[in-house]
Length: 84
Image 1 (cartoon, rainbow, N blue to C red):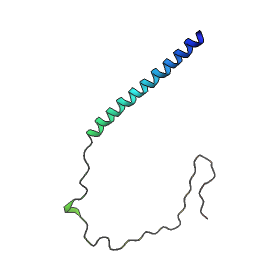
Image 2 (image 1 turned 90 degrees about the vertical axis):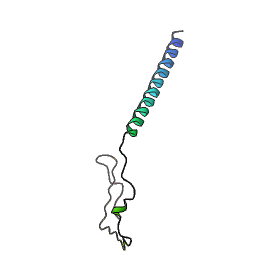
Image 3 (image 1 turned 180 degrees about the horizontal axis):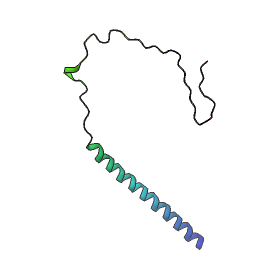
Image 4 (image 1 turned 60 degrees about the vertical axis):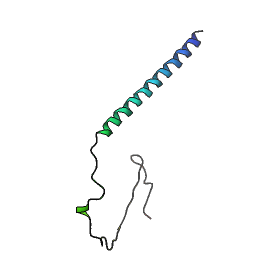
């Protein structure tokens, strides 16, 4: 009988904590919406008085010299990506 009451109490506590976490998430989402509503707007996408010339850009080029990429996921690890 004590085991039955213990399992029921455990289930009640789990459900109680889960409902409190759900309520906290909902309250935080309302707070975020309130913050987002008061963010200043960005500048317009196209500003007529500040446009580049019609022939811009005429040409473009990207050069990458001696690129070296080293990726490690934890300290003192061997490099996962090596230059051949």
